[in-house]
Every structure is written in structure tokens, then in C-alpha cells.
Image (cartoon, rainbow, N blue to C red; front, side, top):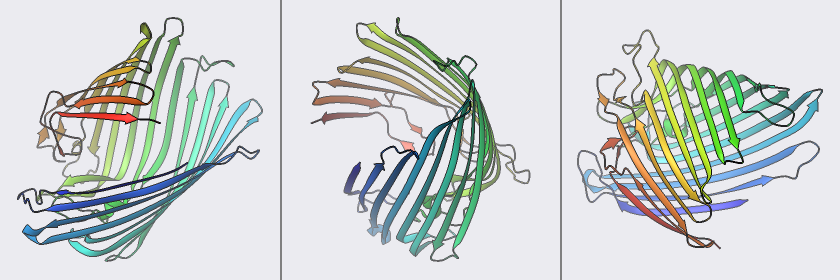
Length: 419
């Protein structure tokens, strides 16, 4: 499979947030392509290869403050995968391995140095990951050990090259008490423990310096120890067309050097490392399905609730024990989807974001918000379909999870021709 895409635009830009400047302009160009290859199955297993390239160019000019910033960004990713199945006694064993390589190069007239100032220069990054995993099915029990290595090298014009290497592992176990030789069974319990390392993204490190945001080339990788467990249940009755599924998952993580984007006193967003963070939470979800509810029409109802408590766990911090900014403790969603196969669909959904603190000291917060959306699609023929969607139907003024203001009521209409 080979694919390519491109996009170019030039539009007005407000310039600085504090001083709107109609003369400001921003040009964006994006292009990319990719290829995926799956080799024929062989006695040694299944192989896959993929390659993706992306090019991004932007130029921001603002005569009001003599700004002319250019950003020229190239990225290339390569990946390879392998897996095979075989039986070992009474156990069914699946072994898989994945390797990937990522290269990023950025030239910018507004790179961010470690003091937050803008400089002219280039930055590049090499990254590689290798992971192995084994899935063992033995009767009603599953065992899933995995391990991986991640490496990154950053080279930035004004700093010494830096590299980091991380080794991660995980061990999961599952139990399906009603599993038989012929069917999986409706109930499944799973537990997992493991470590993880997340390197700062290229944009975390080198986001071009501007009036709104700037990167931080001094960021350290996130490291964590994670625990999670859950119960899963699903059942379906083919005669009545009724289906039901429910899931309850809990997790607990200890994180070191969590990367958090947060605005400075001057309003410029920059990513910072938070020394130690303790994160715990749970997710409850469920769905109901009704097939052939009225004739061939079907109805699906979905419910999701999330509880998240992420606090500063550094005992030397002035914010010790406080919730991190822009992370709602409570959130959830509800949706209902009606479908007439190959003819019509209609969906209404609502999402809830609980209050969020604006700073790590928890002295300012954003009120909760409930958002309502709707979408509909009609297929006039196998060649043409028309869809209409509306977001934020209540026309509320609100701020999203990352702290950005979001437009009010939005409508969109889309027609698709297929040949």
C-alpha cells in the first residue's frame, strides 16, 4: 500500500495575543507519503515493513514587530515487524518483535535555547525502539511477558549532543474462568505490572520560540512504574439481537520527570519536568446494542466515566500533594447511535469535563462543562453520501484539556463521492 498527501495555505494571523495585527500572515505547507508492505506468510512467520515521510514548512510574518520566522521540518520513520505462532505442549504461543527508527530535522529562525530565547539554527534527532512480546495461552490462563529498549540522540546547534537509553519490561496475566475449547467466555480478568520510558517529543524539545509557546531542549525522559488491573464482561444473544459489555479498570503509576506543558508568568507555554508524580485512577465503561430494533435499524448506547488523580509527589516541592494543572479529576461521555445499514445513521453524544486547576498550586480553576454534539449521514447511492455534524450545540464558551479557547457552535457539511 502506497499513499501520499499534500496541503498548502496562506492566511491572516492575529500576531501577538495582546496586540491584534491584521497585517500578520502565516503560510503553511505540508506534504508526506508512506508505504506499507506485508510479506506472504512463511514457515518462519509473518513479516511487515513500513516507511513514512513528512515535510512541514511554515513562515510567519508580522510587520508590526518586524517578525519573519521560518520553520522547515522533515521527519522519516521506518518500522519492521515479525510474529509467529506455534504450540508447546498444551500451550499456544505467539511471539512478536517490532523495531522502529525515527529521524527528525528542523531548521528554524526561531529555535528555542535552554533559556527560552529564540535563536537561528538547526536541530536533529535520531530515535530507535525495539520490542519483543510473547503471548502464552494455557487453558483458561494467559501470560504476556514483554521487554523493550528505546534510544534517542539529540543534536542542537547551541548545546552539546545528548543521548539516553532506556530498558522497559512488563508482565501481564489474564484469567477467563468460563473459557472452553470452543468459545472464549464472557468474563475476563487481567493484571499488569511494568516500567516505561517516554522520551520528550521533537516538538517538546524544539518547538519554535514565539509569543505563545516555546520548546525546552533541557527536558529529561519520563520514567514510570505502572500497575493496572481490570474486569471485562461481554455477552450477545443472536436471536434477540441484544448485546451488552462492561469494563472496569483501575491503575496506579509512579512517575519521575513527567513532561508537563504549562504557561509561564508571562503567558508563554513551555514543557517542564515535574520531579515525582503519583497518578491513580479508574475507568468504567459500558455499552448496549439492539439489532433489528425496528426493522433492520439498530441502536447502540455507550457510556464512559473516568476518574483521575494526578498529584505532585515530590516532598520537597511547594505543591506537594496538589493536583497537576489541566487534568480533570472527573470526565465522561454518553452517546447514542441509530443506524439503518447502508442508508442512514444518526448519532448524538455528550461529554463532560470536570473542573481543572489552572496552576500546580491549585489556586485557580476552570468550571466544569458539558458539551453536546450531533451528526447524521445519508447514503444516496453506493457512489455518494452526505454527512452533517454539529459540535458544541449549546454554544458554550469553554477551554479544552490543554488550556486553549475553543470556538462556540460549529456546523460542517461533507459530501463524499466514491468510484
